[in-house]
Length: 514
Picture 1 (cartoon, rainbow, N blue to C red):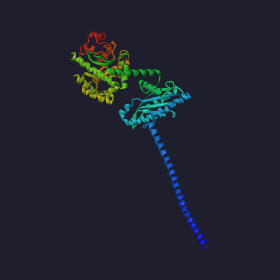
Picture 2 (cartoon, rainbow, N blue to C red):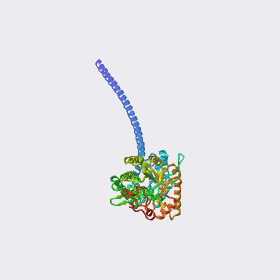
Picture 3 (cartoon, rainbow, N blue to C red):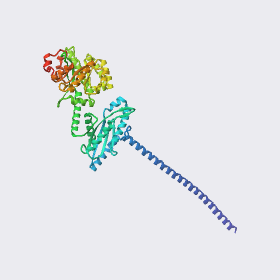
Picture 4 (cartoon, rainbow, N blue to C red):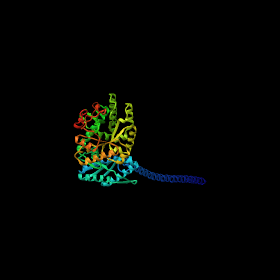
C-alpha cells in the first residue's frame, strides 16, 4: 500500500514538474510572441516611415529635376524658352505641321542698335529693355505660338498652323510695331526697333537647320534694307548670302597673303590755286579669278565680320610705307594723305598708338595723315574720345559723306574737325537740282562760318565745277580731275605744283588717270 502511494506521489510530482515546465515555456513563448509582435509593429512603422521618406525624396527629386529642366531650357532674364527648348520643340512642331498638312513659320527677330543702348545707358537698363521686349513679342503673337530668346538681343518666334502668307506678314508687322513704340525704363524714354526675317515650312525648308538659317538670312536682308522692317526669305537671298560668304573667305585670304590688295590715291584739288593739296588713300582688291572687286561689295562685309580693323591697318601700313618711299625718292614736301576709318575700327583699335608707332618708325610727322570718318563715328562718345587723342597727336580729322548721316551742329561745335566732305549724292545733280544746290550752298556757308574746310566729292562735270566755284567751295576731288591711281603714278602731285591752267579749265587731268 505504501508502495502504491509512493508511486502515485512520484507521478504527481512528475506531472507537477512537467506542468510547471510547460507553464514556464508557455510564458517564454508568450514573451517571444509579444516581442515578435512589437518587432513586427516596429518594422511596419519603419516600412511606413520609409515609404513616406521615399515618397518625400521622390517628390524632392522630381521638383529638383523640374527646376533643373527649367533652368536648362528657359532664359533666366526673360523667363522665355531658350535655344535648347527650341531644339527640342521645333522638330515636333514640324512633324505636326507635316502630319496636318499645314504651314509653319519661323521668325528671327533681332533688335537694332541694342549695343548702343548698353553702351549709353548701362547693362542694367539693357536687361530691363530685353525683358520689356520679350513681353511685347509675347503679347503680339497667339498663345499657341512659341517665343524663344536665342541669346543677346536675338529672339525666335515659331508660328504654328499658318494658313496664309498674310498671317506671317501681319504677325511680323505687329511685332515691329510693338517694339517700335517708346518705352519708359527708370524714367528714361527709350526707343528700339527690330529687324525681322521669316522662313516657312515646307516652302523654305523641311528641317530645323534650314528654317533657322533662312530666317536668319531674311533678317540680315531686313537690316540691309534700313532696319525696322521685316523680310520673307527667298532663294535670291540665299544666293546673295553664299556670295557674301565667298567674299568674306576670299578677303580673309587676301588679308593673310597681302598679295591681292593695293592702295590707290586720288588727289584733292584747291580750286583757287590749282594745286593738289592732299591725296585720299583708297583700298583696291584684285581677286585672282573675279578680277577687280568693288569696295562697295567688300567694305560692308569687312565691317560686318570685324575684318575692317585688319583691312584698315593694311591701308595704314601701306600709306606710311608709300610716303616713306616718296620722301626717299626726293619728294621733301609731301602732300597729306587722307585715310578712311570706320566707326568699328575707331572703337576697337588703338589707332592713335598704331599711327604713332608707324610714323615714328618711318620718321614721318603724324600731321601728314588725315582720317576721314562718318558722322555717326564722329559723334559717338567712344569715337569722340579717340578723335581727341588723334588730334593731340597731330592727325587731321575730316567728316566723310557729310549730309548723309545724323548731322549735329552742336556736335560740330564741340568736336573740332578740319574739314567736311560733301557727299557725292549732293554733287551729282548740283547744277540742275535746286534742292541740291540749296543744300550744298548751306553746307559751304556753314563750314566757312565755322572755319572748316569743305571738300566736294565726286566732281565729274565742268558744270558741277563751275557751280562749286560760284558757291565758294574751294576744294574738290573726282574723276573730272583724276581717278585713283597707284602710288608710283602720283609723284608729280606730291610737291603741290600748280596744275596747268589749260588742263584745269578745259579737260580732266590725265597724268594720274587709272
